[in-house]
Length: 286
Ligand SMILES: [Zn+2]
Picture 1 (tube, rainbow, N blue to C red):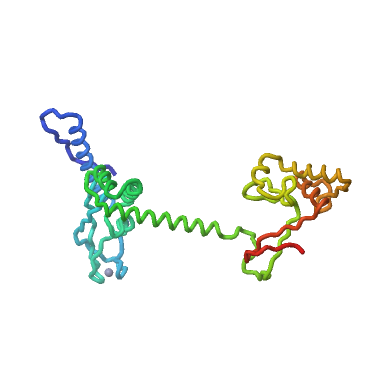
Picture 2: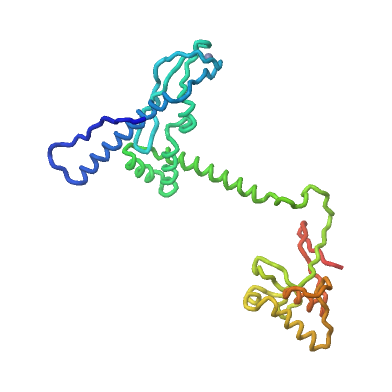
């Protein structure tokens, strides 16, 4: 399909400066685009498959003229001719081209490209300023209320998308325990070890009595010292007191380096760690 737009560029015979010449060419270009879209819409309509009556679904139709509809494009207003047909079965009139046009513009006049441009400009500037800029770009006025509606529509879509993503993120991962199963009225959680991962230190934070690496603010100390430094210090203190070292909590040899901190602590002192429960209280091993 090849379309020709017969629209000459008419300029005054007097010499023009660059600015008015550019403006004249720009206005001509907008008219070319408007005529091209109207012609392309009409030619494309002839390629669409025949429609059936939306009321009785009958296929016995006859042409009943055209009914144009104006849309506001990025290059100005364009009148699109819609074929009008009459159903011989029920006598109703309808426009089969609305099946293509309505999803794009809805009940308004702005195609998606214009709404996107209006939403971007309206999110960047005040509505009145955005309307002036958009009017200048497309060569036809745009109301600030149009900008506001485009921003509201785009904002509602973004909010719905964010809410859907948040809801999906809050869903339990595959393989997670069934959240509907019966739960005990009170749940006590015991931590067997000296290093616990936290959001301040992904390598683990020492829990304990405020000795080396224990108690108080752990952030700066945990970042300056390697994770096993407090455990080595505990081992030295314990050995100096003549204590006997025991393996890590599971009793098996070859525990990881980080677990040796737990072994040293377990040898010297057994810690009882309280953990927050669902009701806000703290459970502690008795
Ligand atoms: Zn019908």
